[in-house]
Length: 236
Ligand code: SAM
Image: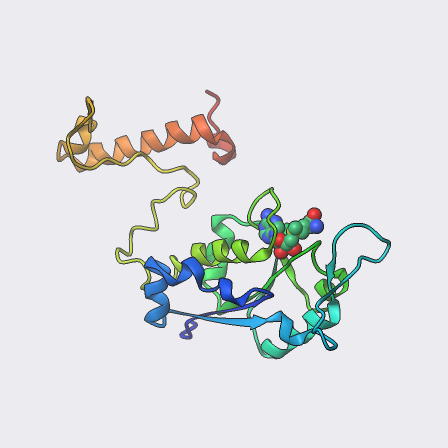
C-alpha cells in the first residue's frame, strides 16, 4: 500500500503551462489539499551553450528540429534517481493509446515522470536509454506534449482516493464497465416539450437500474459496438 500522494514530475519547455486547467475545480482542490503533487522541470535549464540549446537538426535531413538526447537525459537524471519507482512516460502520438484501464493502473502507482515532446519529437536513443514508455492520447497530432500530459493527469487525478466527493461516482461512468454511460436528466420535469423518462421518477430503484443498463447497452451498441467484450458483442 502506497501512502505517499501521487507525484507528477513534468519535463517541459513550457513550465508556465502547468498546472493550467489542473489548478482549477476537482484537480485544483485536490492539489491544494495535497492529494497529489506537481513538479515542473524546465528543460531549457539543461540546454547547452550560451543559448541553452535543447534541439538540433534531424540526422538524415528533413524538416523541423529534434530534442537532444543529452539535454533530455540530464533533465531526467536530475529529477529521477535510481530508487524512483515511478514510470517514465513520454507523451507521443506513436505511443500506447491511453484508455481507462491504463489510467487506473497509473492512478494506483506512486506517480509518473512525464516528458513533453516538442518539434519533431525526441532523439530515439534517449527513449531507449532512459526506458521511456510512449503514451498517446489519441490518433491525432498535437503541437506539443503539454496538453496531452494535462489530459493524462486529469484522468488520473479524479481516480485518486479522496479526490471525488462521492466515492461511487467514478464506478459507473463510461469506459469503467466496458459500456458507455446511460443518459442523465435533472429538473425541470418538462423541457421544451421533452419529459424525463417516467421510470426515473417512479421511485422504483430496481426498474431504474434495469433502464440504465439497457440504455447503456443501447448507446454503446449504436456508437461503439467495438467496446462489447467478445461473447456479449451486439449484432444489431
Ligand atoms: N513527428 C512526430 C510524429 O509524427 O510522431 C510528432 C511530433 S508532435 C508535432 C510534437 C510533440 O507533441 C510530440 O513529441 C509529443 O510529445 C506531442 N504529441 C503530439 N501528438 C500527441 C498525441 N496524440 N499524444 C500524446 N502526445 C502527442
